[in-house]
Image (tube, rainbow, N blue to C red):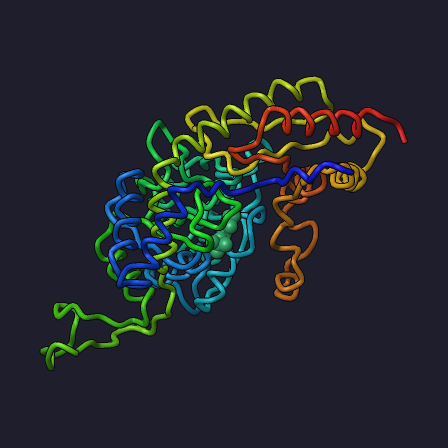
Length: 392
Ligand SMILES: *Cc1c(COP(=O)(O)O)cnc(C)c1O
């Protein structure tokens, strides 16, 4: 019998998590009760941000973040091509146009030098972005000081897509504190670092943005008299003052999130222990290991290696397939967004972002989850070594 596949990511659900969810099922509130505010408090306590809005996905969080910043028709949103499609799609939801900034070939994050070059050009052509979405790929924070400096110079807002990076640090301070951005977004999908099944959050230090995002999360409806256009008609009264959505997180999800947040630091510590071990075990293999920007501590959602294809006799695809066929659940994050058919239909084409495309042609995400045992990790490395070093 073959061994079970070692997945690239996996959640941990403890009895404490299960009990937390069951107690919600036995309580009066399945939605709009005390657990969502408790989860939001856990997020602000952990990160130091002033406000957190829990929602049903990071995709929804990106959408309400863009709406609260007033992104709309005629505006531009820029992000990186090496991300999940949601980081770009949020701009299209708002009727804005989307463009990309190539990655830094060392960190795989949006390159601040390319960003500056593109901003100079955009200024001449009168099409500066309203919103820029840097993505902390694999959990490694972007060069936020450089991006902040450009935001101040060129007048765009910053939404950090920190879907990979909860528990990470920039300059020794928690990702999500929004020191260099307007809004930070987290994802709580099960493959991410902490989970609420589905779920996301948007964090900010701005009361105005927090109030707007709260409206967009729930139909644009308010019960706060200070936001109403006329006096309340009575205890039942509410007003719709924006066109919002139903992006609310349930109490079940939030209770799971509260319980998971108590272990976040342990999760990230375990990921670092595994990454340090990979760094040593892979040292002699023909792969490039992750580079870490000096003033950052990664959340380590992913551990990505790049194959030195010149030094081996197999193709990227052959290595990937051989790993999968031997029980190693590798993955590839990500197919550059601009090469997706939907984006190609908007005029993007292969060759537009060469560093992103180079990355795509030799990157592989190795299994990385905090419950991974050293035995499982040794097995990943053993198979990888065999696949890379054996000749066809
Ligand atoms: C997972 C992910 C998202 C979307 O998260 P959901 O919670 O599944 O909507 C957005 N951006 C990045 C970078 C992600 O990895």
